[in-house]
Figure 1 (cartoon, rainbow, N blue to C red):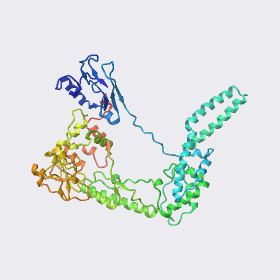
Figure 2: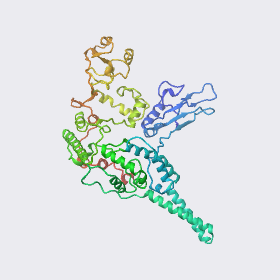
Figure 3: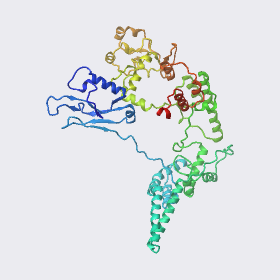
Figure 4: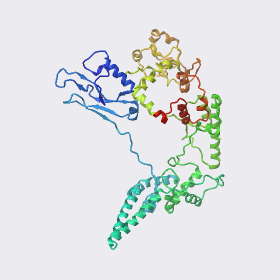
Length: 556
């Protein structure tokens, strides 16, 4: 926030030259060099009045609230307000940064010390006597869920255990000092005894809350007798074998909760567990198992390879091994992988390999969410416009023009292979040999024909016939050479023309190989980059070899 005493744009002044002055040009170059841009603002535009009491005072915008990319990305909702200047010649500027933190309820976690508190048994007994209709597992889960709000209130009444211990410790020290000064006072002795009992109880509560038992010793090597029915004694023995501070499920209840109330809730919990072994299914509320399958397995079980085809085959083999492991796990445990709740996510994977993996693991293909930066670009930069045909703004940040300037070099290498035509722009994407139709069809002509800038290829074809006006083929003879595509149920494919002139499926790697700066291979390349290198370590070594590492000597 600063008075720069010079305007940035021509429309920032009511009186002045129609050309950019030297001061304005230097100011703009300074702003662009520092990668600064105006913060989103509202209120008055002209925030300086040369002669507030005169009828002929010049109005200018010389006060600005500007920030760099880091600030704008971290505080996306920040904005400035320029208020009326009243008796001053400058407007007051207020920068508001809304809080980005969202208050969320913490996950429930049962504290074992509550078991020993007065009223705990009554709360559970009252909640467990509630009559519900449904499967045994549903009844148990529903009752545990209803108990959480009452147990939260009971734990809240006891406050912060650590603060309570510290407070009682100070009060006990003070009471014992008073007793030492007046050993014959009955009231002082009673206060000391009361505080001592309260302190011991608080220390015990804190110990029960923080105590952690050792972990269980893994799984049995063989699943013996898992085909016979599970008895109630086995369920109880399994529950009592779990450490008191271990949680048997994601609901936050520890095993001590179930042990201390087994006489009240044990029968229903046992029936719910027995139902699982009978039907082999879990409710969604208690089934939170997550499996992540991907290329992380390759460095662990497969040697590296520089051959792309061999690399993809190794991915295929690793997925096959995972599928066999899941089948073996199902055979001895009885647990079946939930196909409807399983999804496979792919990034930079060829369509052939993707089809092979989906044939082995019959999961639904999931869509990776857009990053925050991508969402911000769509909302604030593109605003519904096509990336390939957007003007480079003069007052934009440093990074955004750099991205836009790349399009002149790469846009001619993209080609859309039409499948269903729903993901290809009819005007801006290159999907025919004639090139993007926007090269000769103007937006006005497009709108006059009833189309818009968001029209896709599927929107301009009906019954294998073009939907555009017949007059277009007279105005633009190139259209007569374009045959309507035959649609399928597959998604459109983006193709990329490499440096050798061959067309293949688009990948970020292919584009990077085209636009990156190439230099001669250095002698120390194998020291930094090798098959088993750790990326973080390799980057530090690369800085060291280029003498760019900020060591103490460099800092001095």
